[in-house]
Figure 1: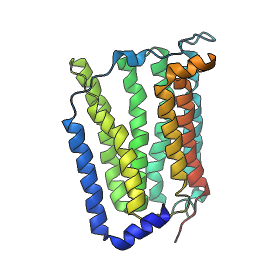
Figure 2: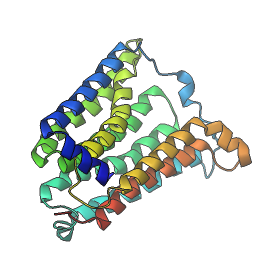
Figure 3: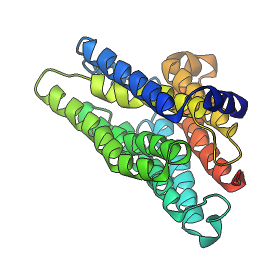
Figure 4: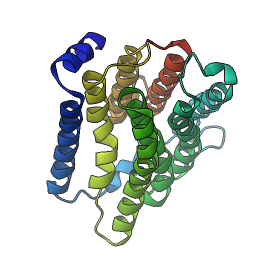
Length: 267
């Protein structure tokens, strides 16, 4: 990835790379707007594993959120240490997107557990809100490290507002009887396009770029487990795909923390 970014940097001016990134972003926005309205499928809340254990309904889908809290709290503690500046970050301000990322990860633990206790659209809002904090802040972190510190920090509050707005607009559309997930789908999907583009178009400032592949791999695995919820539970009857989805997503979050702890500046 580093070689590809270096080659693109040599062949394309910074202005052209920014225009390409902006053009792809605009294309994804237009594509999202052209899609038909997507309401929330009521069957989404009907998860495979509904067993009550230790008095907890849907127990494994609830308690499998604990790793998010652990990763989030440890991540915040690591970032608050002064010693992390200078090795993991060239400028202390670079920590802000990651601070919000790990805060979002920690809050996912509470929001997702609350939702899975009694899944419905109203509780799903509290599951999705912290996830958008994590998605958008990580995207901002990549802008900070690939484009510029100032650009990333200026975009951070705007991206967070887009993420939060996507969940609220979906919720309000459901209440109005015209449910529409397109905006929220954009927030989930765009980082999967934007971050690889940032990696390819702009050279890194730190080592450990390869860890982004691990982060993406665990996230993709989580989405696969989510789709195969019932099939996974049917294999042995022990654990469902959705429970494993939580664990794989928590591993993706941990891989971000691991990257930050192990990396060092390239210049």
